[in-house]
Amino acid sequence: MAAARTAVRGLSTDELSSIRDGLAAGRKPKVVFTASAGQIEGQTGQVIELTDPDASDEFVVVRFGRDELPFSPIDLAVAPRGAAARSSAAAKAAAKPVAPVDEAPPGPGLLPPTPAKPSVPAPREESTVTTSTVEEPTAEATRPAKRPAKAARPKGPAGLTVTLAYADGEWTVAAAQGTKSLAKPYTIRPAEALKMVALVDVPGVHEAVEQIMASERAEAETQAVKLRAELAEIEARLAELRDVG
Image (cartoon, helix red, strand yellow):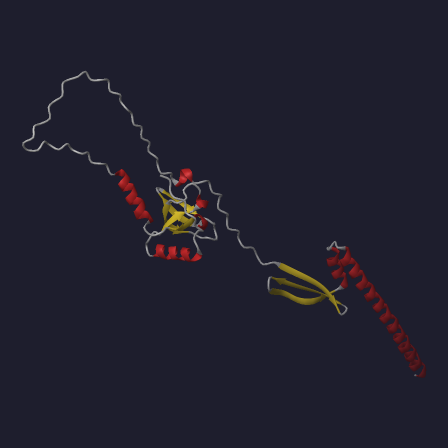
C-alpha cells in the first residue's frame, strides 16, 4: 500500500535544535520524508547524527531500513506522534491469518446426515490464485540521486588596498589590509608617483596627473625666477661691500 502524501515544509531551526538535544540525550528522533525526498515521501526514518551544516547542505543523517543516508532539512519533517505505532498495527492486522470455521458435530438425539448416493464426479476446475508481494522500496533504490556535497571554500586573507594620493603639493602612499592599517600616508617623490600612475591604463587618470604636473612646473618656475632675483640682489650687495672693504 502506498504511503499517504503529506504536505510539509521541512525542518525548522527550532526543530533541528530539538533533534540535536534528543541525540545528545541518546534518543533517535523520528522524521518523515517530504515531497522533495522523491519516491520515499511519507515514509518514516530515525535521525542518528547531525554533521557540520557548513560543510554540506545534507547534514541530517537518517536511518531508513538498513540504509543510513544524509538528507537536507527540506527533505524531512518531524514525524507526528503515533505514526510508527499505527503503521506497525496495520501491518500486523494485515498479516494475521483467519481461523477456519469447524463443522459443529450433530447434537444429542439427532441422526447424522444420510450419506448421498455416489455419483460420477464432474471434473473439477482448479483455480490458481496468484499473489504478489510488494516490497517496501529502500531509500537507495527509489531515492533520486543527489548532487555531490559542496566542498567548504577556505577563507583567504583580507583584501589589500594601496592608495596613491595628491594633496597640498605632495604625493603620498598608504596601505591597509582589511580594516588594519599597514602603512600610514607617507610622502614620495613625483617621479615615483608617475611610475605608479603609468601602471593605471585609464585616460582620465593620466589627464588629471598631467594637469597636476603642469601646475607644479609653473609654480616651480615662478619660485625659481623669484629666487634668482633675490640671489642677484644679494650678490650685488655683496659686491658693494667688497668694494668698500
